[in-house]
Image (cartoon, rainbow, N blue to C red; front, side):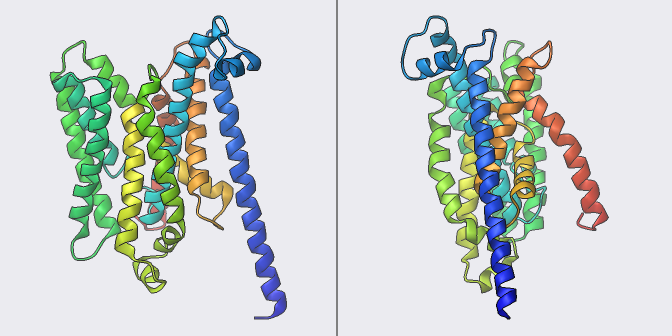
Length: 343
């Protein structure tokens, strides 16, 4: 290769890396701005100095209770749940080389949801037990899906089909539980299934925050093998990737993130589905987009919650707004894949 060609390749790589860095920084700034808006806006709008004073521990009359007890838990839930959904969706879509492969579509979120509704309707358990059951059920669901899809060799198509079947079974169980639920149990179950940031308390966020802080660095460390898995099984093996171990580690990390987020907020629709493609479109493919996908997911949840709270006469749960955004994209994606012969 000539010196000129090498120089052109080097410059192209530098431009791609600069683009990735700039986009990631811009997404981080957008997420911080949305977090500030979540803390400032409400029935009463508080200035930045009052919000900052409350966060630093001062007792500002009127603002202390609203910011600490209501707005701060809601903001943190939206930030960390959106980030977790975004990272989880990106990992599955990249690893399985299919934009439809996200925790919502392949049944993992449905498993968590079925366990949560069972706790609400049958066991009449509190939010702590419900959240723990949702996380455990998400892990068990992915073990069943992966075990059935493994066969002699791992198959992406088989895993997606098995996941869709598991999702159908879990959705049937959820429907039955809602039919036998008592009248006073339905609002809690339906609100949880819709995906909402309402009524979240600080003590409920510890598992979610810990999961994001622990498993996101693990997934980032595995981002290079993740990109190699996107090239295909044989190519990844030839490049020295231990595909089974890497895939299991990535799946466990992504499932824990998705299940922990679902346990706190419910299955917020379309965030895991949308975050990865948006991040790739914005940041390019020079580097793995784990962090950009998480930031896109956080921004989607925070922005949708702000719109749901203040843009309409009636307040809407965040899951309804994200579902409205995600449905047209899903139809577009299916049509595009069908035209390419990928379906």
